Length: 214
Image 1 (cartoon, helix red, strand yellow):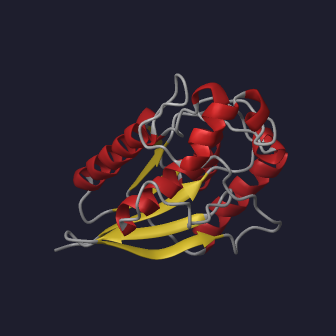
Image 2: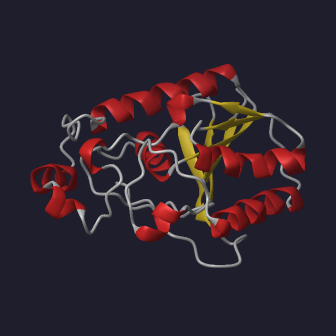
């Protein structure tokens, strides 16, 4: 049976990333550093003679602009998919992680405890988020069997994909680093998932911020 390959990419840096602010569904553009990271990432893929069959991106601007750096170099269009959005963080969205404990102490405590069913007051529970990402991953895999898929999304989404394919408990603390503009490669042989490479930022000139959303 043929193997389906994924190159998962987290978007470049945004002003809110630099501030340690929870973004979620808030549509924040890349900052100048993030734009440079996207350009460096796409150039590295081109230099490595990377070939892919389809390019997917979250519809949020920070991911779409990162994907556009690939579009410009490879000449292939990106498929926008709102199911690849970051988790919605409810009342915590827009707050710095240093502000959230004071602004919403009870919700922040639930967030840190990784309560699977709490929606953070109007957001998305971990269980809901996991179901959305699992369905999207399965759908894309089934639509492109044996192909190579490039997918640009968010730190929380890539962390969730890592949890799903490695069967890490949703309630467990995060173990996978997901830096801005990182390259992460996974594959499915028809029976099981394999992590081939994770959190690769060797193509970036400067340091890259890790994900703080989860």
